[in-house]
Image (tube, rainbow, N blue to C red):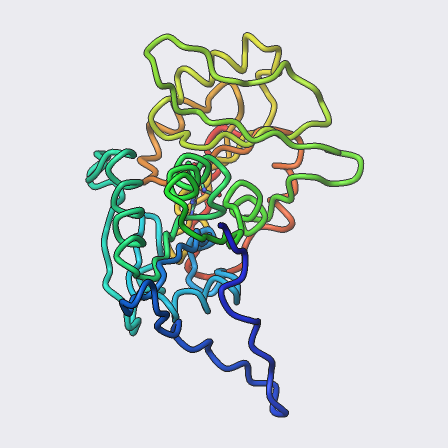
Length: 287
Ligand SMILES: C[S@@+](CC[C@H](N)C(=O)[O-])C[C@H]1O[C@@H](n2cnc3c(N)ncnc32)[C@H](O)[C@@H]1O
């Protein structure tokens, strides 16, 4: 049976301090002493360690083992009383297949361990939460999802580009720019002036998504912001347009992860862009 809460939520003391939850007590199963395994799927937020939720941070304090991806701020992993297992990508290649990751999760929990599966941003936004949660649910393991701050909205926002803004955009669409098969179309919708488009995994397929934007009627001069390593001290923002997006991305040498924001809201960056002295901002071809 799937339970949503392993322990009652801790209550703040009179000084407002919230104590960490104690590790799970041992339970007796059929005369044997065993601990029940448990899985938290935790969203780590977009980059900076302190953008994780309080609930996610608490789960990390309780975990016996943390399976983490590559887009996680390493500061989140320091000082944990847990085994750390890297299951992300190195040099663009997955260290483990998706099937192996799900099997590892299930295996760890069946050993009675309390497992945190830590994923960048929000686990359900292009994060394969569903596949892993189905594997855990099918194995009869109790689990909980701890949502995270997705990069889809927070990275533009931290770069001074709110994805909606009265008079400019009243909706936004998030699209994966990763193509499973060579030649397959991306899910880019037809152009609508008041919809902001956020393209994720935008680094390596820029020529394809740029051509598709043009086919879908996006004006050549519509502003585009390319944001690399947002929410970190290495954030870079390149301002360009639909016409020049692919060549400017290539010229800029932006490092992954990169997302692209397409729409009139990009113009707000000029007034709302970060004033952090460490942020790098480049205006390439933008009018
Ligand atoms: C596989 S998707 C996972 C998204 C994640 N689940 C989320 O909610 O943010 C990875 C893509 O998210 C975007 N991304 C994640 N973190 C980012 C960051 N700090 N700066 C820029 N883009 C980021 C990039 O487009 C990257 O290729």
